[in-house]
Length: 245
Ligand code: BJW
Ligand code: ZN
Image (cartoon, protein in one colour):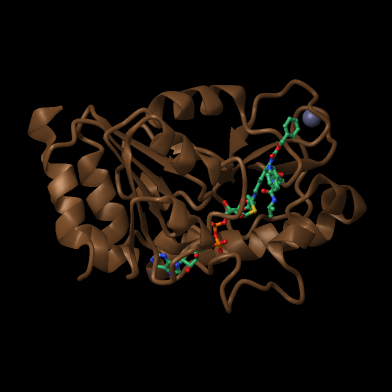
């Protein structure tokens, strides 16, 4: 497969490897991508529903979308791409940043994940009443929209919507992780910022940067290498030894 040998040569000398994943890494597990052919729910795009304005306007509609996705994801299992990254995460020089909220990297046993856009399995008070966010893996949820156990107001998914800031701690950890020898951008369209900026930041620090995606993205031209193939086929061909780190 074009590019795999070149990437393995880089990995052979790499002590610090950072991988950022997007929805494409979970496609082989059966999770629809956002901007693929199966990305629409009813007639809505992610940009129509993943916003604070959509939630304010119609919290039930937004929760119906999340409940549908939670039920779908609950039936999905990690694929070989998740498994390779889980194995790499045993190495201290490795960092996984994921934009995915599905929890499949966690299910594969990946350590130290940086969840850039939160988790679909976490809920929090929409009114920020002070109750700490909580886990709820029930799918379907018994009542929609769910309520905050602290104040009785609306609960919301513990994810990052358009127009919302990325958690400061997450940004700080990413700032450290882009300083690496090899940075891989896997299964993302690279159109949503600030996540899409991380590969460029890595290149600026001197990292070798590569994209793995069956369809090369517009961002690929600025990277060192693009491997045009599915993540679940490419990652099992990559060799990175934990011994150097
Ligand atoms: C495969 C495959 C296989 C298929 N193997 N690959 C700069 C410029 C322009 C705009 C902005 C900017 N900075 C900020 C913005 C605004 C906005 C933005 O980026 N908009 C763009 C649409 C233009 N960004 C924001 O609003 C962000 N917040 C922010 O910037 O805050 C600033 C602020 C500061 C201080 C105070 C207040 C505000 C937040 C972005 C939040 C994104 N949230 C979502 C929803 C999360 C919750 C949920 O899941 O419901 O995150 S949107 C959605 O897109 C989700 C994803 O994580 C994200 C990225 O999608 P992803 O993963 O790339 O999926 P797809 O479907 O796009 O691509 C899949 C890819 O896989 C494809 O390329 C396929 O080819 C490939 N593929 N099979 C490998 N087998
Ligand atoms: Zn509350």
